[in-house]
Amino acid sequence: MAAMPVDDIDMDHAVSNSEPLKMESLLDHLVEITGHRDHDLLDISVMSALINMVGVSEARALELFQTRGELMVRPRVWIAAGKVYTMDNEFISSDVGEPIVAYPSLVTCIAQRKSRYEEVRTDGHRSLWVPIWQNDKVSTCLEIVHDKPFSMHTLQVMEGILSVYRNYQSLLEYSERDSLTGLLNRKTFDERFARLANSKLNEPADKNDRRQAHENKSQWLAVVDIDHFKRVNDVFGHLYGDEVLILVANILRASFRAQDRIFRFGGEEFVILLRATTLEDAHMVFERFRMNVEKHHFPQVGQITVSLGFAAITPETPVVILGHADQALYHAKETGRNRVCHYDDLVKKGVIDLGKQNESSVEIFF
Image 1 (tube, rainbow, N blue to C red):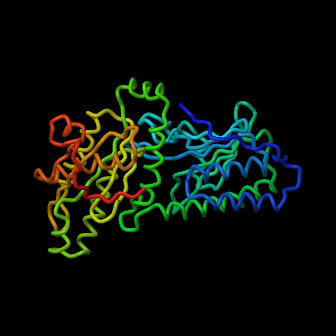
Image 2: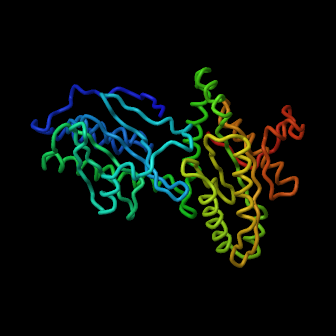
Image 3: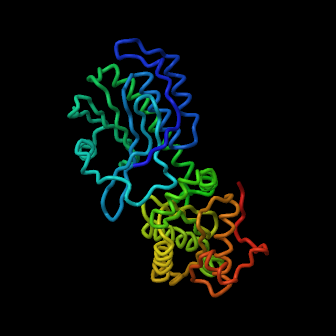
């Protein structure tokens, strides 16, 4: 499982359980934890605080997600031997992760609705499992490894740090979501897609070669538009229009994998980041979503359809990639709607003139 070292942790200030914990250092860590607007950086900050304040030897932030009806676990960020690692999240493949049953102590902890659960590992170290409960659900869990039992005082200090982390993670999650549909919002898309596109742009050539050799899998950006949505609002009113948006969002969630990302752009437009799949599979998944919408009966409204344009995420600027997907969407809507169009296919067919700037229905800000 590929990992990327991000930074070194300053271990000079790590303290043992027997040494007094300094209030000043604790406050500094709390300020750092609450100063981030990114989940990975938030995870890194809280685990750095645990290492420096408590002296734990290793820590991981694990993500829990559903795929094909099975609850899976995969590492998101972890610290070991004084270094911070993150998964290369933007290029995560569908087979990354393990069934949660591979972590029986975590299963027990969640089943018994505990705030923490300590186990002694076969190597003699102790793992403390800390699920982060949000509205009776767990999507993140910390594993904290130490070579000796945690004292009650240490556990109290850790609980204080984790309470701040839990509350701030909830606030961060709220700020990233669209209030109507619960999907990720436009601001979050701008931040994540700019980071994704820049990472592609800066990839070494040999890494690109390895990715191309991996069954020609790519990352894909799709722009979705509900056909004749203005008519829905005009005929049935905005209350039913909002219900259509919520139901389309639900169909989007059901049509894509846990590692894919779905955003509401605003109005009747949605964006999908489809990860690590072939062109053939991407076309199939997008078509399946289109048909799922077409077959769904919307209360009062009846049938609606969507148009979708998609493009590969290549080493180009975010504006160019999003523009490609939007040009494909524009063509789908201009040629009958209720269609899925691929940008490169349209270029090969001569439908899109590379020398001419098409109109764009999506406003692009980066």
